[in-house]
Amino acid sequence: MEVYLSNLLVIASVLILPWVWKVFNYVWWRPKMLERTLKKQGIHGPPYKLLSGNIVDNFRALKEAQAKPMGLSHQIVPRVAPFHLQTVKNYGKTSVTWFGTRPRVNIMDPELIKEVLSNKFGHYAKPKPTSFGKQLVAGLVTHEGEKWAKHRRIINPAFHVEKLKLMLPAFSTSCNELVSKWEQWVGSEESRELDVWPDLQALTGDVISRSGFGSSYKEGRRVFQLLTEQAELVIQAVHRAYIPGYQFFPTKDNLRRKEIDREVRAIMRSMIEKRGEAMKMREACSDDLLGLLMESNFKESQEQGNSSSMSIEDVIEECRLFYFAGQETTSSLLTWTMILLSMHPSWQERAREEVLQVFGRNKPDFDGLNHLKIVTMILYEVLRLYPPGTILSRQTYKRMQLGGITLPAGVEFSLPILLMHHDPNLWGEDADEFKPERFSGGVSKATNNQVSFFPFGWGPRICIGQNFAMMESKLALAMILQCFSSKLSPSYVHAPYTVVTLRPQYGAQLILHKL
Image (cartoon, rainbow, N blue to C red):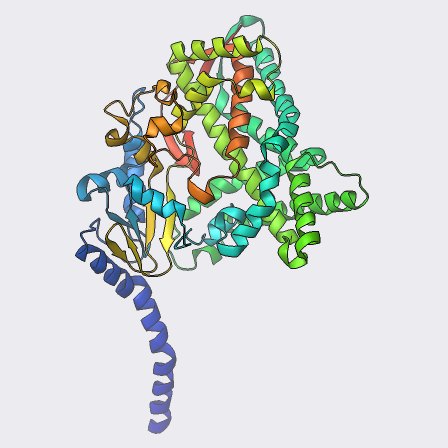
């Protein structure tokens, strides 16, 4: 019996000890070794905490910041990114925080950001998305290497300027419906209060439904509703991302996320299969994003073979990305633009004068949109002060040298868009003021050719849909300015916060005046 028990203990030790070591290495040994390596090179930050890192500290700081009222100021960094800001103040612009067990080195030197985002030799990859993130966004933004190159090559034709022209009627239809809705809302009263945030969210979802999926417009609207709900659920889940295996717990939210994921995939698959059948019968229209993507994918398959084209699962992921990224980014930009123009009426009037000079009361056209210099300056300044995405992340996959610092494999970089856009060392002492004239000479002149303005990213992985978003924003803003003036309502509370993108926490209550 003693021999039997002894053998049993040996077997148990052989089986259990490696697992114990793996867990210990993951939650403590490796993070502490990385922390020590970074400290030796002068990179300091809040200390690593077992398993959670600084996630809890970050959310506590956010909760405290959001509980305090703020005035009508564009000095929003202390509210939107309080923990990140305090880290920079305490430990310097090159500092480290911990996202769970992973170190994130903060980089705020434009030259180093340029080196990371240019990624000439493929040394800096995007961090692998969590299981939560995959349920929201996948596709091109998460791929690396040859798969990324293949998808980018196939998708590029759909976002060519000439193809975007074909989508302008769909943009116009959606914008016209919004303007008509607001005219009916105001009615004979001439002025009336309205929270424009939900309507602008619906507008951008409507635009992507029409321009993205054409005849499958109704199914597209359902996808928009589901992904909006999914975004809220994913953000809630991130608070618990550091708990091992949390995504497998049968909680109500976890089950709902999986249910949404299945429904979105089923709707997308149905749309793609129907479009594929119609294309075979030469009945399909290829002037929407889905048609253009499938046409480009078919051409790739014919020229390079099936192995070079995207699978139906790949197409589903790219369509879902069109939807989420296109809707979220543009709704945020338009909402903050309307809020800021209501806060700065002189710029609102200048923008309206330009729109009326170019278009009069006629429907805006593609060529005219490219002549809206003041409107473009305003949109750039809104993107600077209120970027939809407040941070970019990259990581090393092997030992790397960056700016004289040696970084081990597995270290993430935090490229803080919001902090960079508000940095007085880059933009002057008036960095927190709304001054569209900064961009009167274009982006290069405004930034002194530095990578200090990157709301759509930068380098080879710059957002493929930025021209789509800018054209949609110019058109919507032009049509709104033709018909309405706006000012802030007394009920408006200035409270920017992040839920995937930067949003107004309590809505965007404006008083619309029909012109």
